[in-house]
Image (cartoon, rainbow, N blue to C red; front, side, top):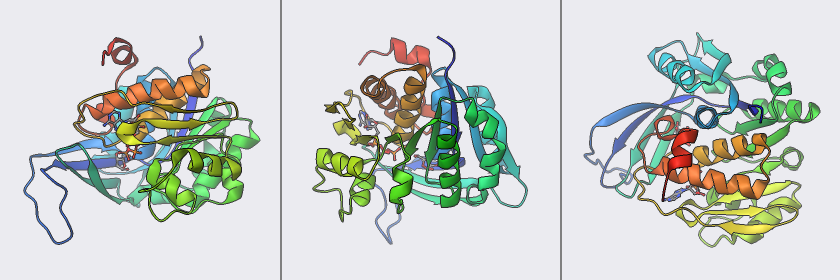
Length: 305
Ligand code: ATP
Ligand code: RIB
């Protein structure tokens, strides 16, 4: 099997993480543990995940000309992510995410986007040859809307499959959704996209059908420890999550999306790819941090639940 090629267009942050008993309510101060600083950002996390699983990954992103940007670049190189289209932005600082993680491994995140908000359609155009050589393009929503649109349009014009992880959620046009081959929302994002006020009473099967009616070819709704709902032309199925002790669920969705992209680029069918991705994501929640939690292919192969 030749090495699968993937291009990820997305954000790169440095995550500043503190674990505490609970996440502070508005106005509350909570004393937590030591802080850790790790490379994060949805696009970069997904790129690192797929590269550690063995894919040949090109990342299109912007980092600041600062210590945070250098930390991210070092980790891309260590993980084998191609950085030819990672721009060092001299005008904007690196993206930063402030993350509180509670005793159950759940988190609350505030992102200062910095250079991510300067990632432009022209930056995507420069990576055209990398996209053309990929079998899958992966994109999320931590970068400007016009950049997401350009990446998807370019990939489709080149006949490349598109995986969209619509996080953090914002309105998406029908035209854009119709160009997506695999949409990977979590339950909150799925609820938003089908016009529900909250995910409290979300019926994932119905939501997936509604999203498919909007023109998305395949829908995979991630449901945290409840697993994933996969809806394709030929099947609709709930894949249960692997049973693990959650330490930090930050980037579980990114581990899932990166692994899904890797498996699809290798030629797996969507259902099989989703099972592999659920395994990779489960391993990632047993570890602290975003990119620090992504397992290698060998670790996935040897992992027993
Ligand atoms: P995040 O925003 O923290 O990256 P998310 O909300 O996008 O995550 P989730 O639905 O929480 O994504 O998780 C993605 C996938 O990771 C799940 O569908 C599941 O397969 C796996 N996963 C998440 N949490 C757990 C858990 N506690 N135990 C096992 N698997 C989990
Ligand atoms: O999905 C997790 C990521 O969201 C974190 O790494 C943080 O940087 C935010 O972008």
